[in-house]
Length: 385
Image (tube, rainbow, N blue to C red; front, side, top):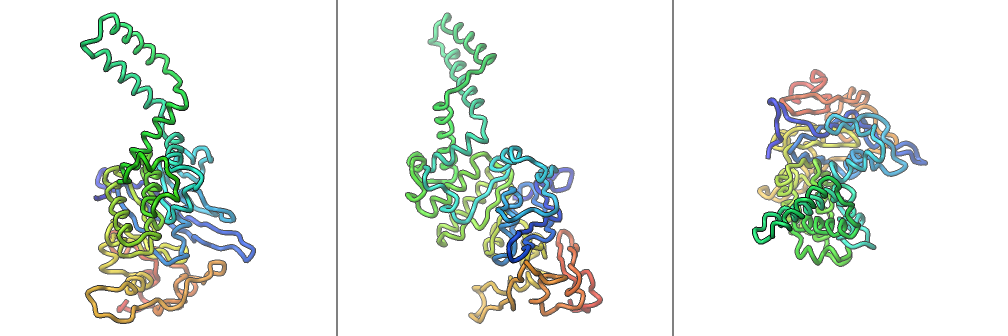
């Protein structure tokens, strides 16, 4: 499914602008994100990939303002539909988090409360974000109108129903908590049914430990999608699952994307998953976006040395078995990150500018951005690069 367009240009749902996140530790300040700029378009699936520790999950938590202490958003802007959510109060953020922007985490046992049933946990989200009183009022009005339309109802009874209809419209009743909870439970069962949960009526009364790993992940997805968010952030949503269940969960997420017409930010280190379901890909290294393009272009013609290394490290079924290529060195210490390009200690193409100046992203072809001095200072690297 392609991102929706307006007046010939793709609508942007979420924009990160020069986002910086620091963690203040006894050892020093960890510069986890160092000026990340990224757009998520409406209706697209954007993959955010990179090695463990590169800042992918920090980016996700920053978007929802859930950076754990001692972390802090040090600079930048997070624009949701043009409004900077960094200026929002916690009460305002609660109306966005879970309702407009939802998250699915990689380990459901960490984020499901073992002391509450699945139904309790999903209904809590529904009661917080959905106007159940309005839904109950609409149901009450519908019941009265259906009775009025019944030809077997006597005229005097129909007149009483008409008066009752007017009264309910003019003075909406305050519905008791048990009715609200019952309606929320109905919506929770609907959400579980939407994610193809077997026997959802039974699952709502079960506890997390009573479910399999795949069922727990479906419950987390149901909780994230029960309010039809604009953006789903899926942070390694299938890491803890076996191969068969992983494929089912990915297929489910893509089906729900089309059904709910939402955007997805998929955070993963699995390039195979990215190739299968993402429209565009952002490659992250040590807190920086180093390459961004549509998926086909990235896999066919990667341009940043780090992206090239990532793709070469993937085993290919159609090639003879051989030792996998690897990127030399290790991810840098972000308390004292390398000056200039953070990848330069591991890059066999590095030259003097790489050691001194941080490269800025440049558009080397339409919608293909690379942050590398090979493209900002091509005369230094020669024509072969």
